[in-house]
Amino acid sequence: MRTLVTGSSGHLGEAIVRTLRARGEDVVGMDVRPSPWTDTVGSVADPDAVRAAMTGADVVLHTATLHKPQLAFVPGQAFIDTNVSGTLSLLLAAADVGRGRS
Image 1 (cartoon, rainbow, N blue to C red):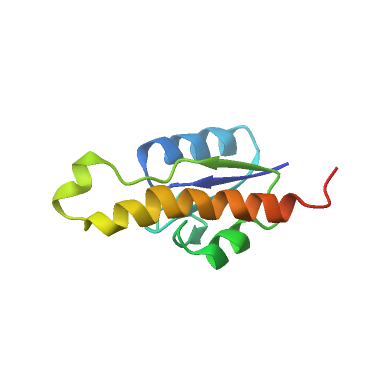
Image 2 (cartoon, rainbow, N blue to C red):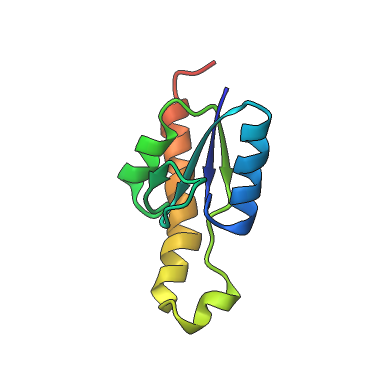
């Protein structure tokens, strides 16, 4: 079983990737920032990047987010792009990829 973890360079995403890999699970980490826990560098707001990262995934754990501490250096539109559009992008890709599965 393959798991896609978004936000893999953040605190929660990194912890999830680390834990699953320690258990021997097949995990793909996705984030806009490279890290030892990130296999795919890309934004959840980019539907093509999401579809590519989701290929072969059976489970998606969505932990990518922009939050309050980042207000000082991230434009407001980035919050909408990541937190709203990114979540929608993941939901649509999951529905699309899941078609035909039983």
